[in-house]
Length: 179
Image (cartoon, rainbow, N blue to C red; front, side, top):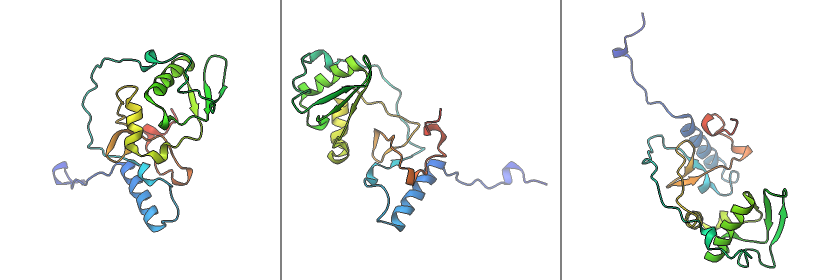
């Protein structure tokens, strides 16, 4: 006869994503010469982390302040390749982290015009998380993604990179990209 509900032991369930993070940490500890070049960017999962409800906010589009000629964004080093006639542009020779406020305004305008921008050879991984968030907040409040991993201590930092050598998050079905 099976034990009654009152007689069963309750064990603490470990979230699959938390278990995956622990496996990655163990792997990095046991073989320090392998693994991600930027382990600080590994996603963390805290199932007890809760976010307040989203609030309405007044948005002021920085693209409205931009110079339509975009001299602070598209300088002599910038090389553009339109992916299609109306949608998407690949940009080389521009470091987003080095843009002035005027350059960021012009980036907002170009984004509104082309919808999708692909910037090559960026230094974002080296400028620090705080600076990355500062740049992103220039365009408005950052949305927190409660269904996927974030950088420890930075819940607004949504991690989308996955290394094929360390794909221990594949069982975390909410963020597997297969929908």
